[in-house]
Image 1 (cartoon, helix red, strand yellow):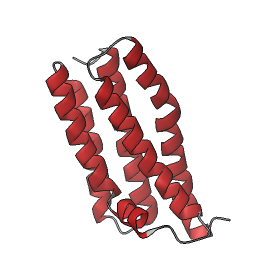
Image 2 (tube, rainbow, N blue to C red; image 1 turned 90 degrees about the vertical axis):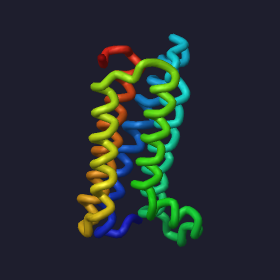
Image 3 (spheres, rainbow, N blue to C red; image 1 turned 90 degrees about the horizontal axis):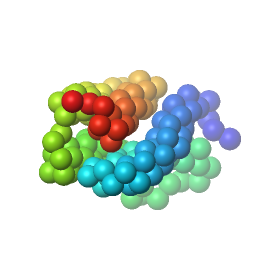
Length: 149
């Protein structure tokens, strides 16, 4: 049973994980099927973000203590997401022309995630991380589908 004070945060992060994992797998399959040059960036994005959000869900719902490594990873989730965003921008820029629209939305999502570091309210922290991931998912979809220019 999830403690009442953590329930909202766990549900927010569960939504983010499922949002990234289910449509993310379709996005990966589409990028791979069309041999899009940013397939690696899409895979990195989906795996890193979905895994970090699921880690938060597991940590909030676990009845036993989570291993120290995973607690540390959870504590620095926003920084890991930001590093993954920089890697995605680098991969996308190297593989093909990185559209300004997609890059801007990736950066805005990263700023949402970084602003969660300075938030004392846990619900806001979880919401900013989820919002940043959703914005970045939209940017990756635009990049993969070739809509952004």
